[in-house]
Amino acid sequence: MAGRKRKHLKALGAVVDSGRYHRVNHSVVTDLERRFTNWAGNWTTRAVGSGTAAIHVEIDYYKDRGHHVVTAALNWPGAVGPISISGLEPRFVDVDLTLAGIDDEAAADTMGSDVAAVLVTHLFGNNIRAPRTRAAARSRGIAIIDDVCQSIGAVKDIVDGVYLESDALALSGNGAKHLGAGELGFVLTKDLGLIEHVDHVSLTSSSRSGARLFSAYSQGYNYRPNVFSAAIAGSRIKSLDQQLQKRRSNATTLWQMIRDLPGLSPLFDPTDHNQSMLNFPLRLEPEMLGFFQASAGRDFIVELLRAEGVPVLVWLTRPVFEYLPAVCGRWNAADFPNTMRLLDTMFCVSEIAPPNDAEIMKLYADAFHKIWSALPKILGRGA
Ligand SMILES: *Cc1c(COP(=O)(O)O)cnc(C)c1O
Image (cartoon, rainbow, N blue to C red; front, side):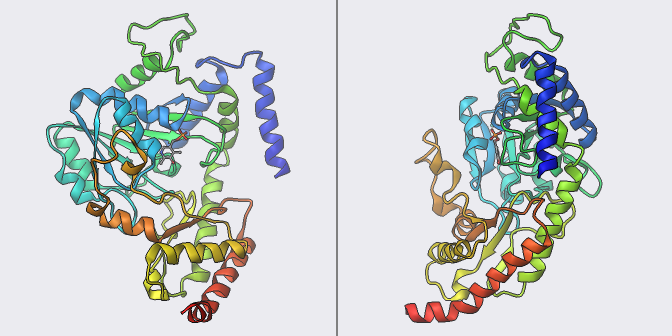
């Protein structure tokens, strides 16, 4: 911890020493972009203000291709908000139960001529390959946008050694994500038109070349990256692979110790060495444990785990359209059974990152076992 703090202070100190705390062409920002491009290995990178800004710029760039954006009903409101902001309408499809990713078949079937883009959100560190959807989008000129804000590893060659078939990836560097750099986002793409678009819409008065330029295409978004956050992010790239390894091994270790508990399963395979394990998502079968109502059962277990000191959280509890006033009321939760099932039965173990290690995972596992062995008694008394 002390080492990390020192490293961050050094990175921030370099910004102070530079005498300039802003500008997209600050060497701290361009260094970060170059280093991230090298780490990812396939895309050109532009740093922007946030992950949400990255998604907005990307949808904005492709918005003339149609009027709808196909995306999953189990989603982060910040990922879906930019669809309406761009003047388009979301078209929701259900998710598959094994990954909480967009249902590949259902999504592929909705790729009509009125669709501008498909937005594939990768939640919790999973990888959503969705090959049929990507192929259908490609054959119809529909843009493919990947929200990898929670899955930084998905920018790498994760599809059997090949990169995701994607037009644009959006990444977040915010404090709760892998780069943990405050407020920061990235646009990753091979589409140089999109890169130009980032530069046009996200700056008003300072261009990449340093000229005081007011672009005729400016939309005044001012999605400039924070230079201090860029400095922190840049200092963390070197240890990113190590961080991911540790997250994966922590989750794998924990899962090995709790896998025999009935009614419990991981959302995605923790031993998959390509996933990014932001939080460790687990699913319950509350009925198997003797609960009549799924979400109440899940909440009860989560409360017990918390009381034992396990850092667990229930993240989203509603399908994404219910969080968004612009689209709320036009969609019905009952039409998305897998989304609802996951929302009712999922929870995450959150502190899976280093410096936590196998010893801490053992403490978490002990708490799971203690609760599972007490459950019959607890529930029996309640009946
Ligand atoms: C965090 C997050 C975003 C937005 O990133 P910010 O940097 O917070 O704007 C978008 N989508 C998902 C899935 C996220 O987790």
